[in-house]
Length: 599
Image (tube, rainbow, N blue to C red):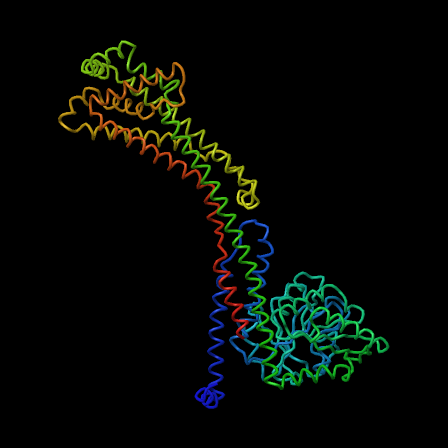
């Protein structure tokens, strides 16, 4: 340290140090609030293997942040909260009454006795607990200590069969100022609500006073909680209750050995010997004197209280950061699953579009009814010979044909509409069936689909397809009208008619002969020549090429829109689930780990 730094440190007053501490706490709260916001927005909606456990971690982390971590950072000088927890019948309430020296919480033989949590504090510490600084989800009820003692089996709040949503506050001068005792429900209660509440209260504690007995100190449930405490570095006091004097050394040694093996060797261990209760159900005062003196000394030691709070707080923040990393990994798995489901859907409908467009340009649509109607339209083989001999004579002849019999052109359009609609319906149904099958082979996709069958086209799709084809055909007619507005081409255009030219353009669009064989190639090839030569006679070769390309592009657009609407039946379910990536969660987890390390 330089001379200037040394001088600055000497000049720092307690007020300066307090201000620096307050600024650090405010910055920490900002980090914690940001992490909490991200956690609260994380739902993990997809059924991936990691999701169920991660959802539980989210609930735990939010409760830990709301009930303890953020409130403690906001009020670092608040009294310590010592939660008295343990197994059913371990004597928690009896111990609390003994520590206070007065029957303030109900004790008895009927299980579970402690249903309503009771927080005991010094009267001058009331302001720290009457608001919702900690455990904000529990309403506050002000309890009173009767002027004359009542037996412990009648003291405190009466057991309530309903779910507990409140916290009873009791002020008593025998509780040392600077520390509060919270009598919690049994951690292994037969009531699910009681067990959950016990876990919530323990997670909000600065200090655990864990009560077990000589007969039950090796039970699994309490040890799971103790190991959780060890992982979070929380300060733990273990009370071994109801110990027969003859077995004290043996039991104490065995329990201490277990604590050492599980990383809890630093936990304070107090033994309460088995003793008869007095008429009020109270233990002898001397049986809990060591624990009472230890709690009183801790309450009176400002630095000691700060150390306990800091250690527990850092452990809690670190535990949240670890859980948050697991949640982030689950979110990343969700994001990957969502992208895979989306990709499979997009791929199937892209392939469907490719197959539809291939069918429109490989000559397949010129088979059957379309080919027959086109042949009716252009006439017999003599028409082809006339075409080869004299394009002018062909134009006159076809013009007269068009003017005299417009119906065949409409029949060509109708046949094309029917054939194209069949192709679109078939390929859309194939895509839907493939997506449905692929999604159902995946747990997340199967959960999204549920009992709904999306393996066919949506309601009214056939009508939508027909309307789209008609819209495309009308667009072709409009292109022909627009192209034929020039004076040079107007006479020719009028002579052939819009429907006739439109039919010819559709045939040209569908005229590539890939996929045809034998006689079909000759027929389709001749069909294409007729249509193309007819159009060229009216508009010219370059214009026909542009018209055909525009017609193909417009058909692509119409088919794309139809399939986009269809695949939304799948993708909308994915969008509604709204899975998030784990990137932000990983970032916040890193920030929390740094916060715990810095503290």
